[in-house]
Image (cartoon, rainbow, N blue to C red):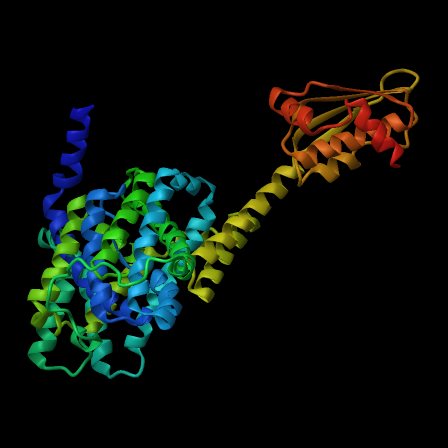
Amino acid sequence: MNGVMIATYKREWFGNIRGDVLSGIVVALALIPEAIAFSIIAGVDPQVGLYASFCIAVVISFTGGRPGMISAATGAMALLMVTLVKEHGLEYLLAATVLTGVLQIAAGYLKLGALMRFVSRSVVTGFVNALAILIFMAQLPELTGVGWEVYAVAAAGLAIIYLFPLIPVVGKVIPSPLVCIVGLTAVVAALQLDIRTVGDMGQLPDTLPVFLWPDVPFTLETLKIIFPFSAGLAIVGLLESMMTATIVDDLTDTSSDRNMECKGQGVSNVVAGLMGGMAGCAMIGQSVINVKSGGRGRLSTLIAGIGLIIMVVFLDDYLKIIPMAALVAVMIMVSIGTFSWDSLKNLKSHPLSTNIVMLSTVGVVVYTHNLAIGVFVGVLLAALFFANKIGRYMVVKSDTSHGDNKAREYKVEGQVFFASASQFVSEFDFRDAVNEVVIDVSQAHFWDITAVNALDKVVIKFRRDGANVEVLGLNEASATVVDKFGVYDKPDQVESLMQGH
């Protein structure tokens, strides 16, 4: 067992050193403007987002369950913090961040990561497409009301990103987003072009983060204030992290530990809150950048976090001159690479219900900018469509080949539950005057109380008309439910029901 663990450890940390280091540097560069922008969204100083991204990326590289996935401050989380910061200030946000981490650790131990199996593929596709659209939309402010130089730099950046990999040998060794950022920064600085840079986004911190216990009273009142925000942050954070893990799993053809990821996200948020940072989670955009730049292991996430803080604190003079247009080009590449273009072609071939689930998820996420609401709507619609589909496969066949037609056998096939219970009852002919009724359910399964009530209704109606009814073939699971909640074979309860009619 120890041998397997050591082999796994070596593979995850040192199996792809060059690719992880280079991709980590690219991600670090891309994280900086995003962390600053998310801080502004939340209403806090840029250093809060930058410290959070550093702490979360470093900690999650050791504690996370998905190697190669990037976690940091995110826009989805920042949107949930606005009201808390506005009404109560930064210290309450730090306390809420610590509580968010505690809730996520609890979710990991409760194995809630396994709930991802209830999220259908169409919901994941809708989630991915919505994020791609949101990532692209987030770049539009940098491309509106600006001079031609910005468009030229952004276009040049996209050209470098997509054409540089075509160069023999070198194109495969050095990540094109890194070439884009470094090359365009040098060109813009040399030509002294008047365009927005990272330095224009806000003041960068000049010191490393320090341990900072949130300055809030430890009272029930404080808990009442922060708990609703922490619960929302925990849910959205885990949701986005689990979705991103699924996408990185697909991109790398590897599997990951969902419950370990929940715990890892929790630990990283606790550390972030205690080091002056805001809550964060996995970032699909940065994770895609990392994978497409060659990152696969935990080292890439660690390098991204350490690289970010080194650049911000020690290389801020160089960072400040990076043109935002170059970073916009990288993020546009991410949005193009993230969007599932096959989903557009599949609209013609996929079932209508699948398309509705996918498009509804996209629409709700883009409209509300809230991933949790969009995914909830998608999962709900998928469940309703599934229940409707399974309900249609329930059939009841009748056999009247008993000579004098005074006996009838009904054969039930399929799933009987809340969605098919009404159809189940309607399949029986209660106007038919028969002495014997046999209901064969050996090919059926009764799932819930609604199904049991439907069986009761059928049996009692026939018995009220004087027929002798026999139910045959209940499987063990169905029999357990029927014995517990059914009344047709319990004379006392049947008699009270008969008297009530």
